[in-house]
Length: 415
Ligand SMILES: [Zn+2]
Image 1 (tube, rainbow, N blue to C red):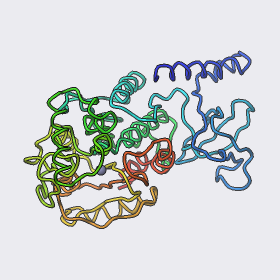
Image 2 (cartoon, rainbow, N blue to C red):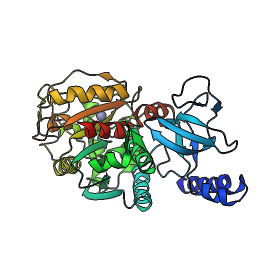
Image 3 (spheres, rainbow, N blue to C red):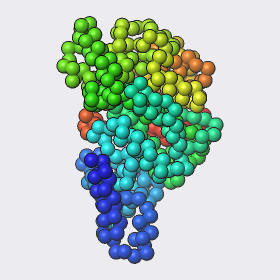
Image 4 (cartoon, rainbow, N blue to C red):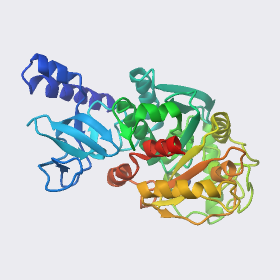
């Protein structure tokens, strides 16, 4: 399906560039500049004569209108030219997506699609993106860490998503955030600093899918798994959860609601700080089981190792759901620096700030107990039960989060 979609996109790019314009030297020049299309705009994207984006719009572009970005982005602002009419004006960049974008399949983003996208991003941006895959999940999937920007930068940011299986919209979100930074790398500015300068100062490390096995279970049930032993583990989890009255769901629904890895361990209870406190399941389960000891799972070892190696000064964690944000824990060593950082991030993403909780083996508990001072925020995207349909939830999530990387890097740049 994805191949067909891509073929269609390439045909459309060709059509827009060469057939809708007279083929002159000018048009050939324009062909160098990528085509964007309007999306997620509801009633249409307002285009303004003034860069303040105020006053009466000079045009309202319906979704799928083709445009060029001729200047920007400066924060949200881009100057665009509409392909068909030649009209120029200012608009909000969050509503534009490149027609030849690689990360472009948001009905249900699978591990295999992500892998293919990573390969293609690496091919398109060999100078800007490096890929490390030093870990392997219990079911044999490579665990990916992507690094954008200057790997020798004085500071590093770590973003991770998909530690909980059923929250699989977020891996797509972080992949799309990353690609957007790549395609505006040499023309984008955030708070008057160019993207290139921001990412020279701060390398961006992304672990887009911490728990690919669990995500395969949530998306495809038993058939998502490769190992027959792990299929048995998952069946045993269901027996336990039914007997312990931890679920009333059918087996299919139970698997869709899976949070753990394929060994039935809740990875966000498998870190060392507060391990074993507030235990919700006494044996492997779809959710809430800590594992027999901290870092017993290959996925937590991988995320832990990435964190220790890159020593990030900013960490962004993506979970779902509730449109809330965690930023502190009762035991945190870094509440002071986080107060300002979390307020800054919440001014961009207007989620409800949650109260601090006592350590219980989560990743957040662990990073706040470490020796590296870190600013961090955990976003809980979406406003309905997981797994939620991307088609209805994702547009809002994208509008809220499309500039999170740039904003956090800009914060580091001035602090
Ligand atoms: Zn979660």
